[in-house]
Length: 166
Image (cartoon, rainbow, N blue to C red; front, side):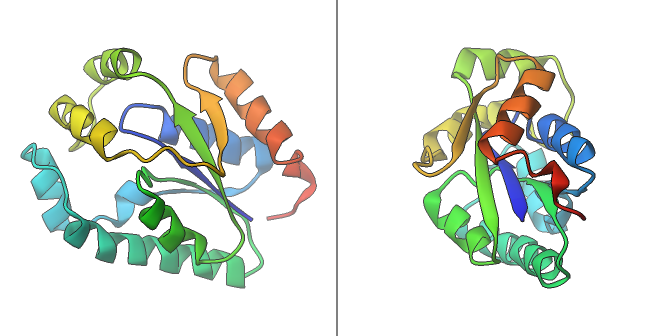
């Protein structure tokens, strides 16, 4: 199984994803690590990515997910996956479940202002919310909840897969 922790920049994908993966003893993957240099440069300059920018990136991420599934392993992936078409691309990799870290613009904007991301400026948050197509088939988690409560809620919604080996 692969659990994709998704949402806009600053919602806590990496933090929640790492905590969830740690609690399950699963591998953690961050989709940001799969961006080509051109995408990183665009975002660092404050330019939103287009779908043409995203497709090769999503294909690289989906390839990694297929490899995890083919090996009979499990992982947690942090990935924005803002549109249904992006989630469909990832879901084609096999046994994939989505967790949407949901929050409002003021809450997440406050979080972004308090952190430094290696290339994602706060100026792109509005474009992320504009692109977001809330999933209809995801586990929805309120970002205002404490980290431990978010992880517990995800595990409960997944049927507490802690017994699944790596």
